[in-house]
Length: 499
Image (cartoon, rainbow, N blue to C red):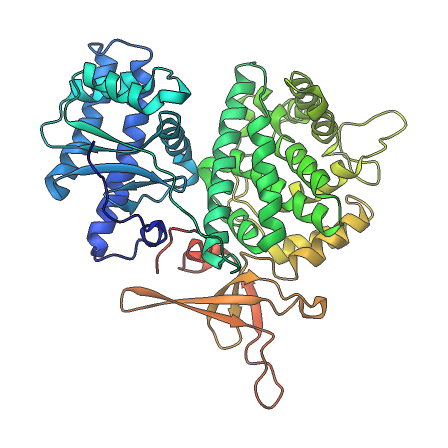
C-alpha cells in the first residue's frame, strides 16, 4: 500500500499554512466538500439500489464529476483522516453545520475499517467507485479490519483506489496548557457534531423510532469539559445564526446556554451534563407539529396556536419512548415545563399550578434568550443580545426564576459573546470574551474587524485597558444588528475561518 504522506506533522496539517494560493485553497474547500457529500449520497443510494439503477448511476456520475475536477487540477486525489477531520491532498476540508453528517460518517467508516486514508489515481471509473462503496458497506471483523477491507477491494477490481492503514502516532505529553486553537477546534467539532446529531434525532422522532441517546450524552459531557475550560468558544458558536439549520442549532444553543447557567450555579459536573441532555431534547415534541404551522410567517390562527402549545405534551410522550428511561425523566419534565412560567402563567396550565423543576426553570431562560436573538420565519429582525438580557431581567420574578435570571445575566455580561458593537472611535467589533471581574461586565474583550486591501484585519482589544492618564482606551457606544454591518463574525469563532 502506498504512503499517502511523507510527513505526519498533524499540527502543521491542521493549520493549513502551506504554499497554496487562496484560489487553490478555495478550490480544495469546494471540491473536498462536494466529494465527501457525493460519496456519502452514493453510498446510501447503493445500499438501496443495484449499481445499474438510474438513481445509482446518477449518484456515481456526481462522484465522478468531482473526481475529474480534482484530478485535472491536482493530478491526484488523497482523502485521509487526521484528528477526526478529513483532509483532501493534505488540505483540511472545512465543515459547516449543514453538512456535518457526511463528514462524520466517513470519519467513522475509515476508523471502523482501520483505514487512515485512500488515494484515487487517474483512470478511475464509476465501477471502481461502486466497488469501493460496496466494500465499505460490509461489516468487518475488528481484529483484521484493514486486511479484510483491502482483500475485498482487490476482489472488487477497484485497482485505482489504494488504502493506507491507520497508524497510532506517538504523542509526547507536555505540561503546556491547551492553546486557543486547541479549544477552538474542539469546540467546533463538538458543537457541529451535536447539531448534526440533533438532525438525526429529530428525524428518528418523526419516523417514530426508538430514540438512542448514548451519543447525545457523550457529546454533552464533552461540552461540559469545554465550557469549564473556555466557555467563550461555545458561546461564540451559539451566537452564529444559520437559518437553514435553525431547528437543530436552536436545540444545541439552548443546551450550551443551559449548561453555562448550571455550571455558574456550581452544579456537579454530572448534573450539568444531565441538564445539557434535557435541554437538547426540550423541543422534540415539535416533530409532531405540521411544518405549515412551524414555518408560518404570520400570526398563527387560534386553532394553530393551540396545536403549537401541544408540542410540550408531544415531547413528553416522545421522550417516554427513549431506550433508557432513566435518562428520559429529566428530559420529560423539561419538555413539558419549559413554557410554564415562574409566576404560574404560560403553558400548559395545570390544576394547582406547577412545581417547576430547577432544570425546567434554567431551560426556560436559555430558550427565551436564543429565540429572541435568532432570525426566524416570523422574526426577520431579532433583537440584539443585550436587549434580550434586559427583557429577561425585566421579567425576572414573573416569567423567569429571578435567581436563574441573575446568574444568566452575570454569566453572559452586559454584552454577550458574539454581540456586534460599535466603539466610541467608530470601529466595529465582536465581543469574544467576558472580563472575569463582575465590575467590568460592560467592558468585555472584543475583536475589531475591518477590511483593508481585500483582506480582513483583526485586532483584539481588552476594553478594560486604561491609558497612562487612567482613562479607558476604548468604550462601547452601542450594540448593532448583524444586518447593519458588513462583517462576518464567524471569523472570530470558526476554526476554519481565515482573515
